[in-house]
Length: 114
Figure 1 (cartoon, rainbow, N blue to C red):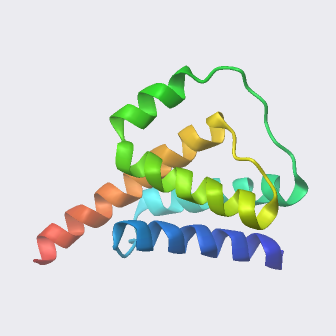
Figure 2: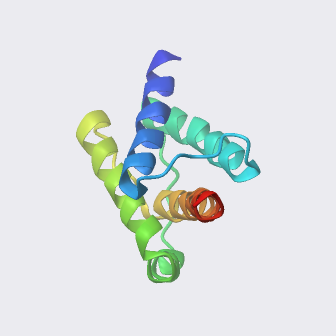
Figure 3: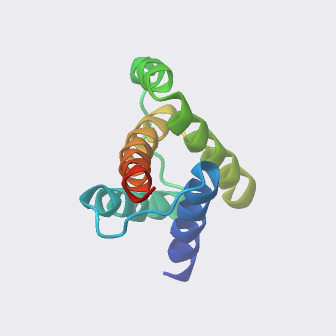
């Protein structure tokens, strides 16, 4: 759907601007992120949130990957503001992990090209 595509594109732009990086669209981690975002966008549009009561992963992920977590929080703020959908802890965990992977690959490629 058009709405899903817009949400995905906007999230990818938030990641790019947050880290000032270009994402490698040929990378497997980018494909994984994109797949995650397709389902994430569907849940947002259908307002269908998976509910979990375990936030212990969030504590570990947010302290292990603070930059990626900060970006995930920015995405959460954007989604809440534009789609009236509260991104829960589980979604923040998965988003943070995917962001960490693509960001690491992008930074490695930047080092190689410098």
